[in-house]
Image (cartoon, rainbow over all chains, first blue to last red; front, top):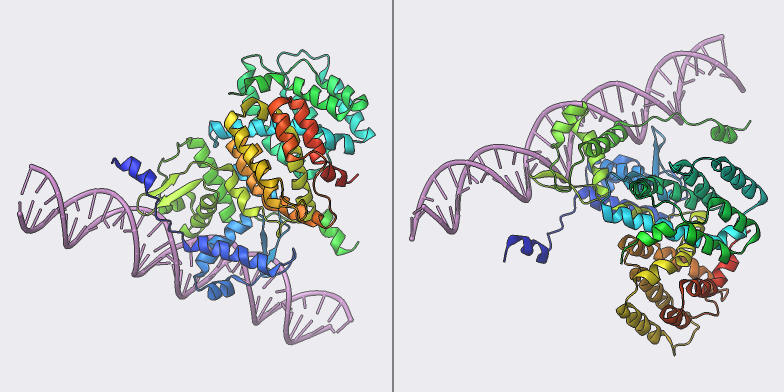
Length: 232
Length: 232
DNA sequence: ATATGATTTTTTGTCCTACATAATATGAGA
DNA sequence: TCTCATATTATGTAGGACAAAAAATCATAT
């Protein structure tokens, strides 16, 4: 049996480092203690002593948690539990240049799915002001030549939709996906595949007078070129 | 003005540590070099020297990237660029006990939106086998008493739907959201708010003979109790 | 000569010590 | 009691040391 096959059959011995172990232990500790944001944490030396490892290892683990926004440190005051932030970690990895093609495609599809699913929450939460703002966005883009396609308009319009859901996690998530959106759309620009027959203005009209059902249909038509590009 | 208000108005001076700086520099380095997964990275000492910091700092930064799955290290062979993984970082933060209520609610809504948006991709990609499997899942749950509500069935059914999209990022993302789903659903169990008039079997029937539009309607009805609980 | 085993080299993992720095606590003086 | 100076304390950074593991090299035996 060639070694390449062997390496698939036999799992590599998982030798997690002390930092890995300490990281999970710290996470468990935070969970178990059920500390509130702002609560002080034991100092590095105490942790190191309690865990039986060097301060170095503790610091590596803490550094990770700090990156995830789980803890904050102030000199002297020691560390405190921070307001958790789900998306902070996401930010660091979401880079079109780093991700492989398949993942990019997956995320693009994720976005399509989100747009298709927005309708109900949108109708439930949108306000008059929202519609006015959306109108001004649409106004800005009309009159302009359709080619070259203005990515900015797309971002403004669709971004506003997310904002109208009143779901901030949502909005941030979407804005983080933007580079990917731009990336994929940019690739398709050459093919002239951009936007379906239903325009932003049409969608706005639907929001004003139509139903969630209408909106979904409209959005599907709007995104049609993208859907048609999906494989299988 | 009380100090609590002041601290909101005046931004804290951002004093990023060396580890922070090195982390971003390393990330930039990886991007600029456009290395392929498996490519070897410079050794720690070289990096430290090149960056003009101690090996300690470099290690803290590397530890972060390792946690995100961006790099792997083998003893002696040095470090190599790993296959990127968008969701690895997410896993670490997604814990109902750590997240605040609003974020939990936001994520729950995210899931509702996803389910509503699944239809088109689902119809495009589902196979005969998928439907059979879905059928067996539905078979298992019928005949059982509806209360106590079986969360397992929910997970099996909806999880299968995600899997049927053929989008692995999707599937993983959903399975990571599960604890949150369970958490929120568990909270609602007491109120008897669980599932609408459209059952899993109904949804399966729609998948077999209906249109994406039908499926969306059905799913909306199925999720109706949850939608009704949304505020505003 | 090839295969096996021993030795060396190299790089990461871990520990330790030391000191700078900043924020707080303490104390002195008016 | 208030203000200023000083001491204390915890984190941030540096640098040295060594263990361990993996690879490379060399030595030996059949």
